[in-house]
Structures are given as structure tokens and as C-alpha cells.
Length: 321
View 1: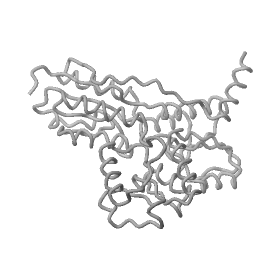
View 2: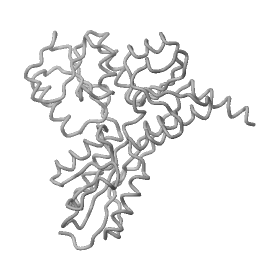
View 3: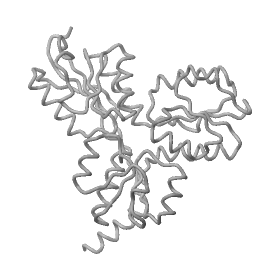
View 4: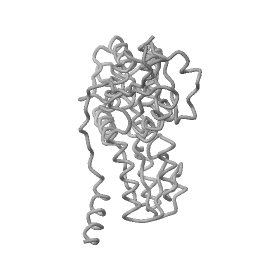
């Protein structure tokens, strides 16, 4: 048991470049085009981000048939299938695509390998928006694999022409176990040209392991439908540390903190830093006055705006001057 009560913040934590880009796209679209702006599904998986954008007038819909013909719609950071793109054309919608470029990379890999006649094993959660979008690129060639126990029942047309791809927000450790077992069954299975699990997911999981060396428990700020946030909880558990997913301070239970001198704190890639600050202040008030940081990775990643919005923004700025 540690002596001095304190909070240990994971670094890095919170917003990744893809989330920042997606939120910027929505805000800029509202600024440049005005209302109405529709967004298909949650722009990122965090209810506070979505609620804040809703208060600004953004209209969130589940499906495109809720968007009136000819209106402007933004696709979320998780990507969509070709079927959704075709549906948007049929409704004459003005599309702005906020898909994270790292998700787009996985889509392109799926298209490439399907054209080459490969069987594709897509490691991920079948009900996640990202996996649904990727699967839609080549449903006849892709098999979604969630659990390593399902590998024994896998069958492919040609075991010499098989490749695995992954959802970008998975646990590194769990995914490696699945890949190792796939290699045992299919020795010739190919890997993607570069790692599919995104830099931000990897960095946040590494930082949680750093925090776990110092903390008695870890709080992860993020919504329950955020895959990368849930994986952070799992990584902490894997390190032998109790961990809990919270949306905000109201979710923190006093029983969790009983006997804990050091509370670790991180946030999923779609959770805003404002929420982390709220939790820190809450813990300060509960008798955890000191705050330190664990983790040495510094991120310098940024993504450009989609061309249709970048050009419209540039025109708008010229008009103002």
C-alpha cells in the first residue's frame, strides 16, 4: 500500500488525431454551411461529445433515410460500407466523410486482398461500426473473427491465400494471441503491410501499463460503446489492477476507492480532456491532492481535412477577408 494519496495520470490519453479531425469536421461544416448538418451515427463514441454537438444544432441519425433528400450529411470516424455510400448518392446527399484515415487504410487493404482472391480474416467485434463498414467492402471474402476459440472452426478456400486484418481499436495483447493461433492453423497467413491497430490505441495501452506499476486502481474515462476505452480497462485487468470505465464523476463509487492510496486515471481516444480534469478535481476533493504523470510517449500526429471541406473552408476565409 502506498503512503501518500495521489492521482497518476496516463500520458498519452484522450483524443487521438482521428477524433480531433472528426469533431473539427463537424464544427467547421456547421460554421461554413450552417444548419442543417446531419451526422450518421455517433461522430465518435462518446456521449458528452455527441451531446455537445447536438446542443449546437447537429442532427444525429441512425440511417440515411432519416436525412431529407439533397441535405448535407457527415459520415462518422468509424467509416461506412459501400452500400451506405451508394444510398447517399441515391438520396442526392452532400457527403462529408469524417472516416479516420487509419480506418480507411484497413478498408483499402480489404479491397486489395479481395481483388487478389484472398480469404480475409477480420479480427474485431462484429457489432462495432468500424467492423461493419470494413466487412461491407468485400462481404464474400471476409470472415469476422472475435474470439480465438472460434479459430478451430475456421475454413478457407485456399490456405495459401489468406490474410488477417484487424479493427483499429483492439487490445494489442489479445490480438497477438489470436494472430499466433491463426498462424498455427494457417502457416501461410499474411499480415497487413503495416499494423492495423492504430498508434493511439497502442500508445494509450502502453501508458496504462506504466500507470499500473504505480496505482492501486485505474479509472478509465470513456463511454461503454467506445471499443478502445473498454480495451484500456482490459489491459489494466491483465496487469492485475482493478479498473473501471466511467463516463463522468457520477459513475465513481466510493467502495472502489476504499483502501486505495494511488488512483490511476486515463481516457479513451474519444473522451475529452475536460472530463479528465473533472475527475482529477473530484479526486482532489476526496483527499487525493497530488497529481503526477506516467508515460513518456509524445504524439505528433495530425490528419488533413477531407478535400470537400478544406476547399469550402478556404473559400469562406477568403470571403471574410
